[in-house]
Length: 155
Image (cartoon, rainbow, N blue to C red; front, top):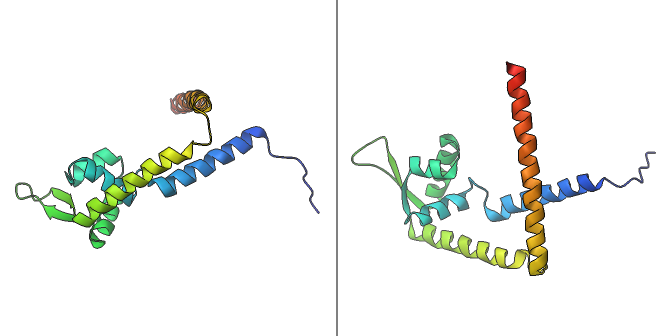
């Protein structure tokens, strides 16, 4: 029988919380390449963009975007049309239902923003932001160091 009464380190507990927050934001906030993000990005561009421009704005691969676009089209949320001037270019346009869903998603994001930190005082929110900024800066330093080490080992 294995009994381990030791509690995970504080650092591990923090990383697990970050993992939970990342998962929560990805699933409830729409991620960077999910259907919701694509609808909102199109809405931000007056409901119409080329697929290439959308890909650049979304920072995802063309294959991933094509898959998401096909799903949105099948759900009747966007229309996909070939350009008359350049047949290689696809123009994506939000349907009325796509516009409605994008607006609803934006509203749900705003509501989440309003509620997410209402358990903290304004001073606590400021301190949390400062702390997270310090952690992000440190992680960027670590990442830069790892890239430098990798570059040196390839030389």
